[in-house]
Length: 134
Image (spheres, rainbow, N blue to C red):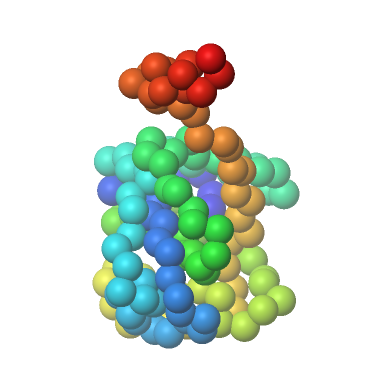
């Protein structure tokens, strides 16, 4: 991505049993429903080449530890921004559509790094946690 504002920007994640992507977004979900983990009406991005940048998700995605999962980055229109693809050594790792037109299956995709954090204990659970250590 290059500097610019991406409109109606969202990131969704979805467990899937699918082992090979097809040109069908919904079919790739394997019967599961994507979880929207990040959404902005206008997301400004100014990515520096060869440096990581990120988004702090506003909702959690609880990975089950066994299924494949899909990360779906979506936006509708931009001002000055451009998405660039980077080579992935595996085949058919990216499905994309431009302006809702033809859907493509590609060997190119954005490099991504996912940071995983431990889930915190909800304040409503403190009584239960305290009881465990009596």
